[in-house]
Image (cartoon, rainbow, N blue to C red; front, side):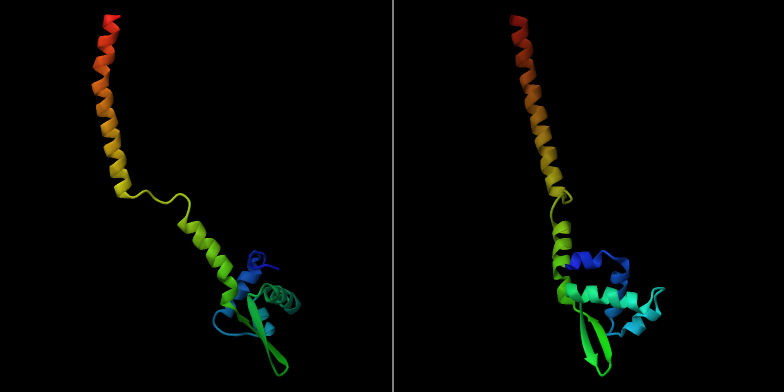
Length: 122
């Protein structure tokens, strides 16, 4: 499962938030949710497959921890969305546009009398 698919589920996103502080056991993560431990385990397995979490065995217990490096594709994608596309127009660009509009208007006004004179001759 890729990281984008893993993040599509709100339960998995909330699990990642809980894992930002410290590694936790399934029982600890399930205690704060209205879903069963097996359901939390399934979500953690999918997060593990995506690389978003790591697991460490300590005796009989398994501790899950966030692996922030797995979020790099997401960060790159979001950064690309926010830095490309329709960027806000700066003041300098608006000043240049105003200058161009005035220049074009001035040229049209100068050209109009010639066109009117030409029509009178014809």
